Length: 465
Image 1: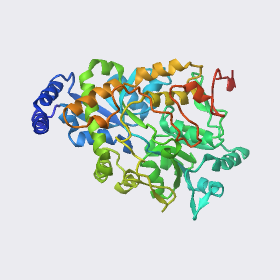
Image 2 (image 1 turned 60 degrees about the vertical axis):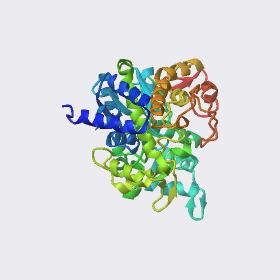
Image 3 (image 1 turned 90 degrees about the vertical axis):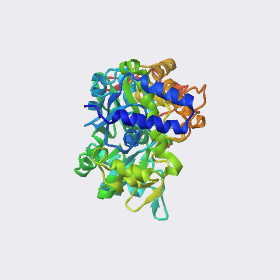
Image 4 (image 1 turned 30 degrees about the horizontal axis):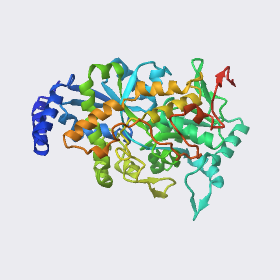
């Protein structure tokens, strides 16, 4: 049932705007609220700290400022979340960056999903059990009695080889086949000479063909318990489930995704293309509220993070202990117990254009889908660009940004300049030193000794040209 107080809150929001901006801006904002195609919305999320923009937009009244009455609801897993966006049970959701792309190309569930908002940069880590860490440690460079970071997977390779020689599978967990976590874990393993396995859809979607380490799906909140039970020896997941392993004394985060690929895009806000086409003004209003939430999260050197952690620790959001969430959310990261190091950009929500949906980010995910056989047929460079433009919508993002600037809620300099191509400059901050240029995806793939490239594909469990 609709909140009967809602119209009064809309009026209050309009009055507060009136104190801060010109009469022209008031008129523009009022028209935007009046032109909403849908006011009552339901959004989904998974219990991870990077859902924060949704929680903050709700708690701080940014949705209401836009004339939106929103419910935010935790979902059981990424597949359920995606299915509910597709069937209309959810209007939109906190999604893995690869989900809209994977759905659009038909890997797993086939559906047209778009995103006009990137929810954050960084935020993941790879954790191993105490026993695996003990076996890795002799191969890890040390300085002053502490490990030298970043830790390369070459330190894990002798351990994996030992398990393989003994006929034991080396099992690791990731959250979903098209998740950032899957691609980051694969990237790290391959950079250290460990083969993470290939897909060969539709016949084999296990991702374990010719693998040294066997990766399988485990829901994020279950990662620590699954590792503690010995079912997996390590995992890649978002917070707070790496720090939870440290607090419980059952594992050691060995590397963050910030160290694998500095300022990598992590989650997005996704809606069905049908929804975006049907409710364009509502979509812009949602993005405006999320941008404001992201700005609040990063404001004044993260001064609001303690309050954000308190909100996220509530059971309706992440539901983990305050101290566990704060361990990474407030500018530090703890590796081995007691080895806490500064990492102010581990969670980035707005600075460095974190919220802008770059085509080059979409193309990186598509290159990894191709690298590991989720895209098993060779594709030319134009295909990568076409899919990126179909899914990522910087035009909607910039429409929202311009409204915020006109209303005095943001500055033009907070956003990419007009005429932005949607491509970041060539990126150099990868753990293996490989440079990524999003305009040359096939050339990029040739740089990796492990992974599909050129005309290669996986047939009958083997790579053929």
